[in-house]
Amino acid sequence: MDCGKTRAIRNFIEYSTRPFTAETVSQETGLELSYVKKILQFLRDTQVVQVISKEGKWNIYVKDTTPDDEKPLNRYGYQKDFMKRIMIELINNHHTSQRELGESVGLSRDKLVYYFAAMVSAGVIGIRDGQYVVTDSGNIGAVGMDVDSKIVRKLRKRASQTPGVAVTA
Image (cartoon, rainbow, N blue to C red; front, side, top):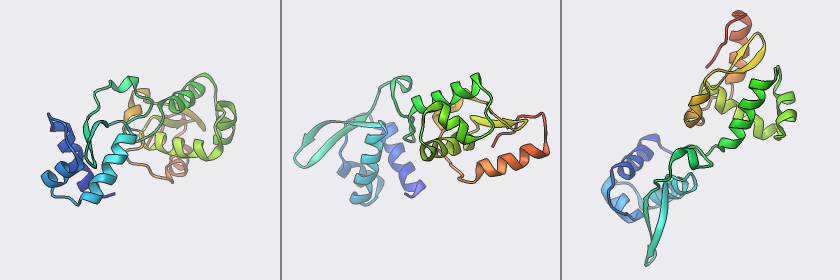
């Protein structure tokens, strides 16, 4: 997905005061209809927009006004309850490996690596003295915005050079 195009669609939705269709968004933003439909489907899945009706073959959308704390997903599609489970486990217990953290939280290794990389990239989780720590629990909304798959490896390397200090992305 092209960030600039997606941003144009998000801006249209943010400032739209009336219900809209994919055709309307395409006309107003100057983007291809097929691309707009794909992005609107993604935004519907992540609860940014919701379908309120259907007009012929077009879905009619509005901006979802459900408060963020009531939504099960953050704006990038990450489940909040998984992130909260990981943070609670890190606050209550000391973990030095992702494998033992995954076993204690009850998540598969793949899912834990996926969420862990996103949380470390957002600065929610850091490393202090070889142990994973929660550094910014209020930043759950930014998890998934810019994920670096090699961030944990880089963070471990930096943490070994600065003992006693919490290192974050």
